[in-house]
Image 1 (cartoon, rainbow, N blue to C red):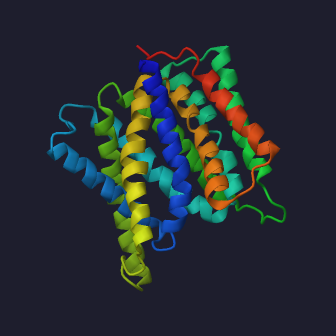
Image 2 (image 1 turned 90 degrees about the horizontal axis):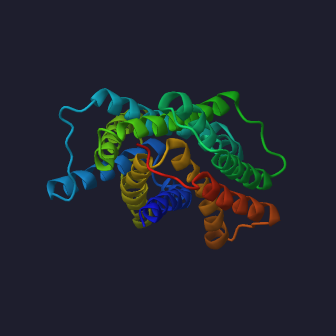
Length: 299
């Protein structure tokens, strides 16, 4: 039952993140990227703060290693979203998908020296298979006549990948001192402050209509999804799985995000999924299962 709970948490955050791509695309018609990130993290901070005030969550940072928490927040959400936002503007989404799909491998490479984690041969095979499934899906979706990717854009997406990998490692470290709720609250608050400053600077520099001028009911619904589900719920589940599993095992669930995004495109936008995409989906599912075979809570 405990293992089922952990696996359900991993599948849960991957599914929420997978659906967030569709939601984000709609919200960006009303808000700039920085405005959307500011609204997303501000709403998440308010929700978590209200839950703490009502006694539903316990937040206590006194006497704990705050330097570790600062490093975690620096990598995620600050550096990750900053690199991803600008990187996606300069590269094809397929290129970004290929790079970010290597996250489980990057986490495994970092967790070995930094966390002294080791995977069995079966788990390594599952990790490789799941990453290969992501690569196959992305390659199958490439179109002809793409523009060349900007070198700066590629480097920024790689920066997002590195930031996400370090976040996984530091969140695993922080799990010994901070609860998932405390880690998630710190992440959301830091994101609200950082992207709030950037959104304000952008608004002052560009002028134009106010923040809410183009907002529609659908746009606010998207903000609610991103702020509550994609931020509060999903990152809480991420931090929970990182508390219970090795960082390299938890990160493998991220490949399910590609699978959910593919399914969402097929069912909600009528996109095509051919044999290669279906083969990649099967590789991801088998890989996630293999990478988490006989997983046990460390320590």
